[in-house]
Structures are given as structure tokens and as C-alpha cells.
Amino acid sequence: MQLIGILGGTFDPIHNGHIRLALEAQQQLELDQVRFMPVNIPPHRTRPVASSSHRRSMIELSIQDESKLYIDLRELESEDISYSINTLKSLRQEFTDDALYLIVGKDALNKIDSWKDWQELLDYAHIVVANRPSISTRESTNNISPELQSWIEKHQITDHAQLKTCSSGNIVFINIPMLDISSSMVRKFYLENKTVDNLLPTIAQTYIKDNQLYLDTA
View (tube, helix red, strand yellow):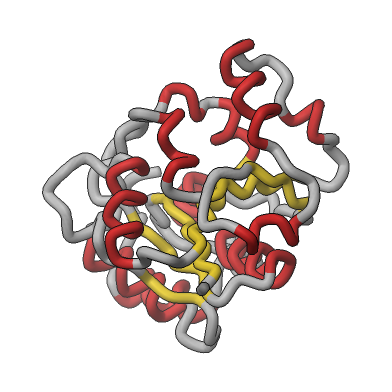
């Protein structure tokens, strides 16, 4: 059984925080691979600034030297809204007997009950929640609905080894020293002509410069 991490987002652009999250999750949970899943049409935010082809190229360049990081194009090539539940169903058809790990941040978990068919997500994958080390699991789930709180408590496990015994169904929190970077911050820095040297890979910076991206919008 392969252990496959799934990290979705607009990646507009991909930055060091995304890559750090993927690598930390891969190492802590001993995943065989982590697949970056760029969305085409996000269900909860405006369309990405950069085109699908540009975002694809930036991801491919940024992870080309990481043997366990991959890009998955099924959402990017779809004409439909990129609902996670549909993506997981598609992945499950391909990886029938493997364990899928949907990697999300704590902010996403706290809003996951707004996702399409959210209670079915665990039918197809485990959910891995990236938590800052300074924030406890209880603090990370403050201010959420009682229904969501109950769902998390019902499915949460603390022993990472348990994830390897089944292909889906559990929620686990992992502590990751998250970098304080967002794609909107990167775009804003480009618009304001500020340095982005520590925000995203050099190869992505070169691509953005060569293609004159993020010059007229934040």
C-alpha cells in the first residue's frame, strides 16, 4: 500500500511555504509521495491571477529536484469547479488500495463544513491538519460549529502509525513550523516592487520575471 499525500491550492504562485509543508508532511508521516493539486476553478475564492499553464510550469520547476513531490493535473485540466470530494473520488478510482492523505491547514479545517459533501471526505482519504507547534489541537479548533467539532473528535487519532493500517477515515494533527507566507503576499510584493528572495524558489522567481507575471494586480 502506497501512502499518498494530496496538497491542493491555487499555487498562484507556489512559494516556500507550500514546499515546506509538503516536505514536512512527507517526512513526518513517511509518505511515498506528495502530489501538488493545482485547482482550475476554486469553489471558495476568485479565479487565480496567473493562467493554468503558468501555474503548472512554476510548480513543475519548483519541485523538479524533489524526488517525492509530484504535480497532479486532474483539477487543472477539468472544466468543472474543483471540489475536493470529486478529486478524492477520482484519485480513489486510480489508487484503489492505497492510503490517501488530504493535507490541509488548520484554517481550512475550521471551515471544512462549508465544503461540498464534507462529511464524505473521510470515506476516501485521511485528513492531515498542519498545526503550528505553538498552537494546541484544542486551540486550533476553537470557534467552529458543534457538528464539526464532534466530527473531528470522532475521527481524530494521535498515533501516526494507525494511518498505515487503513486507506482512509482518520484525522491527524501534525506540528509544522509553518512559514508566514501566502501567495497573495507574494503577488503584493511583486506589485510593490519589494524583494521576494526568501518567499519562493529562485527558479520560480526567474520564471515570473521572464513571463512578466503579477505586475498589474495583487
